[in-house]
Image (cartoon, rainbow, N blue to C red; front, side):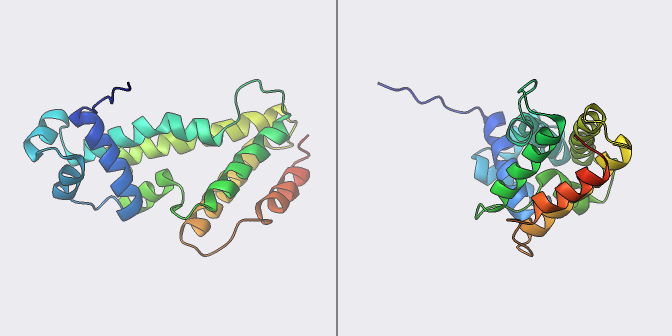
Length: 189
């Protein structure tokens, strides 16, 4: 016999915020969020100071899953070059999913246009952590300019996920040659 664990109102709100904002954008209304979560507005405001705080908490909650899906495990025996390629292979495979709409963290920053917004701050930190991963691997791999390479890699990451997310491009066969050119130019091992 299996017992189904019922999600708390907080968990349901976080899940609804993640799903609805990814599908419909951050402009989703409080009514729609509460309806999807099966939670009253009163309960939502008891759990979260504002919709903005709910969005930020939802993004932060999903960040561990994003990192686990996007980055290779630590000390996995891959070379720094292979570790960077791993990230982009994940983007390419995710981009083929029918519900893929790009990087949720980039989308939030673009939609909000307010760097001080709580959700924008969370998204910015997650993207900064990804760039720090690229920089660290670039340095370990002997890149001639690790800072520049990290900036180039995040540009390709964001551009690839955005173009695939809006259905403007198919990433298959495009990412690896692009990365190979960048990694070779940076003398990356």
